Image 1 (cartoon, rainbow, N blue to C red):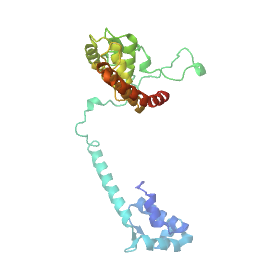
Image 2: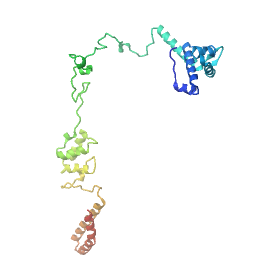
Image 3: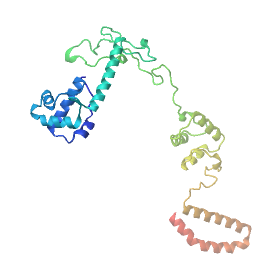
Image 4: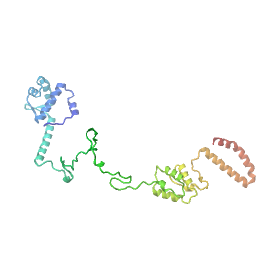
Length: 298
């Protein structure tokens, strides 16, 4: 046999203790074993002469005693015997297949789908085409022309290589409700860009805003609060302000709002009950410093 598997890791693990001469002797004895495909025959002196190490019989004898088993004037190596046996099985199988006309075909193979190599077949092996056939030498382009570069028309943006056309991507800017300004709708589309809007979603938004007195305020109200839905019922006043608090007021603004509501309630009570006018005046005198402080903070 002219080839055998060699695993450096396993070899180093078993021979790391050998000195250089013993390592050379061991490798040459193994090579001799595989070449002849049989056990080594002869004395250490005879084998040392065969592997060209006559002056180092002692190293050859040490290797034979450690790695080989002596039997009837021959030396057997267990691993070499296994490798040779596996090789001979494969060699016999290849020989038998050759006698039967080659290796048997795999199941399901279709010979019609494969084409043999033909040296003089221009269909299977097209000749080289220069990019500039009128020039030669250094002036010629060395890059060959491929089939994709010959008589190829550019594809349109809406067509693919298969010939099928893809529908254009929906643009929500083109679905602006009739009662919404262009700027407000552009702001809303930019706000919804991450989540996206389908054509159906635009139809539902237009239906929800239809008939509202200030649809732009509805859109801006949702944008300011970071919402992706519309709540037209929050915009009920003609000036476009929310009908109720959004829940995002600061602590100072909430106190200011409470003071304003209390003053408005006191004014209504004084208007309906003159006897409470003195109490209201005292109440304002007490709240004056507090109101001034919050106005200063605001």
